Image (tube, rainbow over all chains, first blue to last red; front, side, top):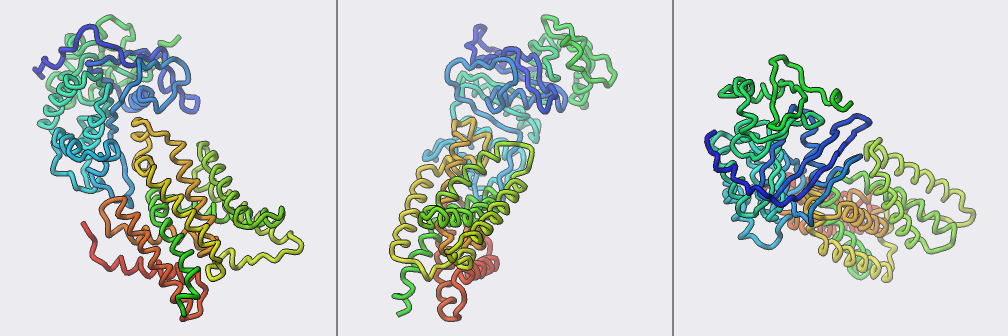
Length: 270
Length: 262
């Protein structure tokens, strides 16, 4: 990934939402603990981490769907949030075209809705029932719905899923464009290392707590990381099995020891 | 001749069928059929209550359905039991209580059969006025809140993020449904009321492309069912409520045979 132009966020970005020491428990089990982060206008932050690490939960805290058990979520001013979930299921009994789906967010302005679909590259799906869309097509329609709101903050859950390489490149470009146009902050949840490296200002590695965070450059400078991820088709898999030293160094290293243990959030709480 | 005798029942039946189109569509989209049953069963308790304290029957039924709807909304906030389990408990408990209450009433004879299967031929001009008033009221509320209602039906998370008050919208839908069911008991009765909600909507599904089309077509099919049911009842001397449901079911079968619109 050579496209570094995407990492040109202004240095003093306006904060949109700040999480302070947030913890979430489901049925007594800590899903998230000690999460502090700030999402700012014009900056792209990516959450990575293994399945079940609490990435989606953290996104839902940011979205305001889940109230944290402890800690503070501060929204700076009234935020318009656009959200692209991984997938949604619309009951087969509900006759709804892609355009009708967008009209829920923006009624009455069919030209803008068409433009939004064109922008994410699925103009031709305008009249298609949503139940007949493929996973990737539905994601784009969801992205169009999020963009229609002209969001201050855009939250994307696994945007690269079900998208081919050309589609991914288009997606990086689109995210950068959107950030320029709306000046919005973007929170990505991603399994996809290419997307992380190409389009991100900051990477947050999550496993119930924040294992490490930093710029992708800082992360990629780490030789161990480089060995593990450069050019490997299995790069995505490798990411799930890395282990942290849990020293939160300034540049946020990822210390991979090669064995298949995942990082354990609890042992650095005490 | 027929028309004069059947005018009031027809007007009453049409009032219910018209509003059952959009409401029934929501019931189908949101898989709330059992919710409708629960409200209908609870209505009997309302009727018994009304008789016991000496207020007229239908206001008591309406009140009971509205309270029951609010109770169900509150109960559904808890997470330990699935929605249909809760509904099953409430539905059959209130039905049992209603029947016990009716049996305990000393002097009054309640037309239990009419209550369970409808009593459309007995409606008065005043009933018709009330039913149409209720229908227009619900239709107006539905139209004003259409996008909100549809939005929470498609996806609650997206709706919430886009600033829609989920609980308020859901409560509104439940209350409108409760009002409809309380009124519609007159036409097809407690036991068959849900069918009038879901059968026309289900029939419309294959023939439409948008939610509005489905709601409107469901209203039309419901109206045709009411018409057909009354004719059947008149010529074959069958009970009206079940005849309407059978007409609706016949229409459903016919729509299955039509080519699907794509």
